[in-house]
Image (cartoon, rainbow, N blue to C red; front, side, top):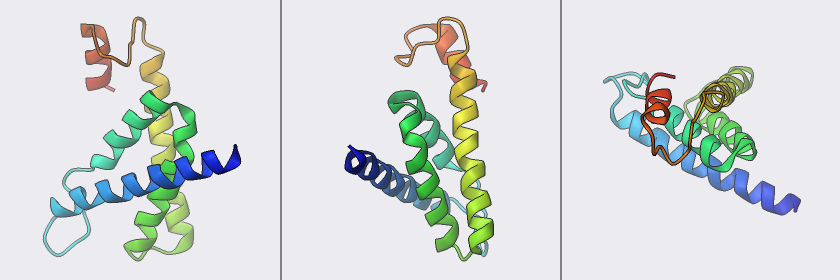
Length: 116
């Protein structure tokens, strides 16, 4: 069972890292500042679809991105904690909305997702 959770975290982390290249592609010239941050939307979608077991993978992916970009280990850890908590809080607040459905089959679900 532990191998399943570890494998899931690694796969989610890899997907998270790969999505960061989209953000780098749209980054500002000469810096590692991204205009868009697709990892946040991906992290939220993963937590909404898979649940809280997706959080370790988000942490691993975020940590890898920060270390890959040259950040120190303490900063990478803080960066990863912040990105993981952002996904958790967003999913938590969206799921607290009345009639929210992951299938987005009603207007309230769509609006909850858009305005979080």
